[in-house]
Image (cartoon, rainbow, N blue to C red; front, side):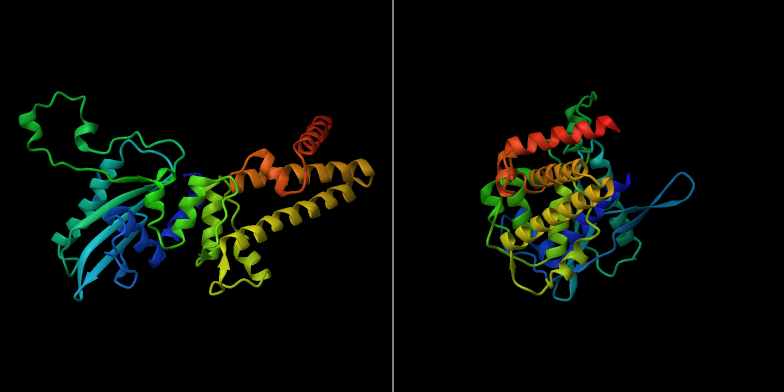
Length: 317
């Protein structure tokens, strides 16, 4: 796995692991908004299970595992997988994950035996066209109906997070509502919803927009004096972070201009800053070029001239 994909997976896992987000995802996607799972009744479970390899036992990891407790005993186990790309063999992975859990129950490694529910949060931009059932996966094989009768009907439950209906999105009560609305609406999405998990939310929005440079988010929040317990609206948080990008761009432009020591260098540095700001705004907020320029107080013509100057500068190196 590349470093970029690994960082993206970590951010997605961190966000969904929060008890309120996990409970919200379970309730909305599995139970159509009914409050079946409660954050206080969910407990983090082991994400590692074992299976027999060719010569020795091997381990496998699921992204998120949550136990649902009822009357002091484990009632259900939820396994949640984050996927950025469609995986044609995901069904076989599911068989391995759930099979590993049931094996541990059989061997008495778990105090309470319980059913396992696994589902996939798919964050990819293209639709999920991979197999969702064993029958479809092996549909090209010449298997008779009499034979199919004895094949376990394993199914994969995939939720395409970029394509949830408005009715489904409105059922979310956690910060997940902000994420799915941002993915669905784009174009300068703003909201007066209060943000609970501020650092995790910004990271999630950034990686889903294709930017995995998220290492400085906590430091920036601390510099701004924003604490996790503070009440901050989405629009306020986004606006502050957008200003961060503009300020950093200006500083970078000034540094490059000073390094060149002449007026042309200043112009090139400022041009590079403007291009970076506009393209970052388009990418982060999913807005058009026109909207990004308007929000940054410039014009499309100004952006295009700055971009030409950057290309000329690169060509002369």
